[in-house]
Amino acid sequence: MPLVGCIGQRGVVGGGVTEAGIRLTGVTRSYGDVLAVEGVDLAVPRGRRLAVVGPSGCGKSTILGLMSGLDEPDQGVVDVLGATDQAARLARCAWMPQRDLLLPWRSALANAAVSLENRGISRREARAVVRPLFARFGLAGFEEHRPRQLSGGMRQRVAFLRTFVAGKEVLLLDEPFGALDAITRAEAQDWLRAALEAEPRTVVLVTHDVEEALLLGHEIVVLTGRPGKVAASYAVDLPAAATRRELLATPEFIQLRDKVLAALEQRPSAPVAAVKSADGSPNPVRRAEG
Ligand SMILES: Nc1ncnc2c1ncn2[C@@H]1O[C@H](COP(=O)(O)OP(=O)(O)OP(=O)(O)O)[C@@H](O)[C@H]1O
Ligand SMILES: [Mg+2]
Image (cartoon, rainbow, N blue to C red; front, side, top):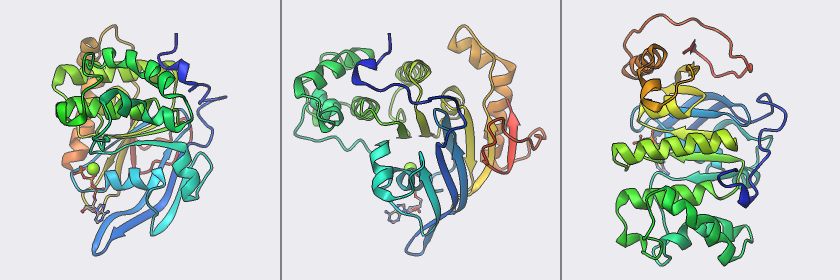
């Protein structure tokens, strides 16, 4: 049974992964004197998941803001599912900002349900959809707590649920599990992976956690320090493994993690072949299979 099928999110992928997803072409954005990102070309095929890693301040959140329609580039084009104008991008994206931005006067349950209510679903129905997910995310018993009565990690999980159930085709997740302890984070990652396998969406995930990028992304893009540019991109092609621990121990996982870490540290790693991606996406520079 679909994990969130009851909220009507389905059929996102359609016929395949080559449909127009998200495409950034020559995107540059500065804030006053600060050049945040420069000449960024990125593509995420529809129904696929891109993980973005890069040093602090290199423009990762800026890129999500541009995709979401909350911000506009100074140069270049941002296309989300065939739409380039700001309002249409806003309509297509559910964005989980780096700070949780919960409504302080609403309970945890009401915060998580707000995106469903915004879609015209009744308050009662919205809460009925969200309530079971509270148990999955270790929030059972805290439904009626206000955000100030929750821990940082709990607030983050409520914000994540609110984003996830919004029913948008595009999910923009800015360090969604950054405030969680290792065990809760692993559970949240496994849950999200299973949920997205069951009901694919087009996802851009910003994270500082390279393991998380490998576990959740179909592709990983490494950005340079500010101004953020694409330094390298890697297809994630890992063997099937029975458990998470087994997957993390496979040579393929270890090798790819090392390549991404090397690119982040800008140190040489094993040479990688310049190959074209199977879907023809233009994420440039170096690309490696697993
Ligand atoms: N609205 C804004 N007004 C002014 N400067 C901004 C704004 N948004 C981002 N910046 C600047 O742009 C640069 C990139 O910021 P951004 O938040 O995108 O980085 P980041 O890669 O997400 O960093 P972190 O990993 O620390 O979250 C920073 O120098 C930041 O100060
Ligand atoms: Mg950020």
